[in-house]
Length: 371
Image (tube, rainbow, N blue to C red):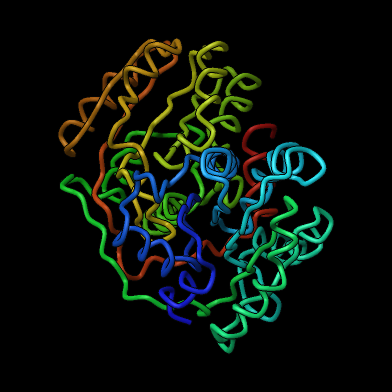
């Protein structure tokens, strides 16, 4: 189904959400039509923020908003859905459009298989009336379904379209930036200087590139934690390791979208101030792992935020030479450290998936830390 047809059928005028690969046609349409930060469309830091934005829109206009997300983001939406939107609380209507990772009979990663299996039961439990959108679904099918939901929405209820692979179509939009340093080159430079440092990599392409670079160097993965899910929580995982293994140096490879999603983790890190933790932010101002739509990072001064929250050694890098110098200075810094690296959008075309399982990754790292 073309996104233009979907929008026409739903009749919505405000959109907020977090980009998802299966919803890329919708996100690209919204970017082309409204941009990322307008009264009609906001790319939110996390899915709960999107639900709250939607609530504010309804309070201001009386109209029904649309919130889009990957099904992995349902966890971030549960609280505002049940304690804000739900018809037994404020009764704020909302249409959710949810990308279905881990849908039945499709190969996917372990964390998506768990989320995929539980998506429909979770929506049902929360009282969200749901239609599965497939490649065979027509605009007439959606029109008939949404018409049946009008009274439910008018009474303060919520409904959702659970979107299967390939169900939506729209010409792909290309996202770029002007930063010269590729993320993969930055990670390779970090690895060359890391030695036996423990590295926690954020969700998406960062972890995949770290895995491939280790393979290319002929190294195992026993010093790495590849955070395959739990977007936004890599920094807190690294903090937990750093606090309880103070003799080990720990690096977290974070992303701008992930850092923004749960930015409060930086305050927790700053309060604890472990001297063995280096927080590295790979900032391409994009949700690249799900298509490249922008984050709000273009308007965020991360080094200033880190300094205000208690990080004591602050560095930035835009080139490989900058990065080499910054890493050398941080190597001798016996304080909580922060390094922002601005990177280009784009990975190698043959970027693959890690062949180690999450359980294997966990066991190898625990052997390194405890053994």
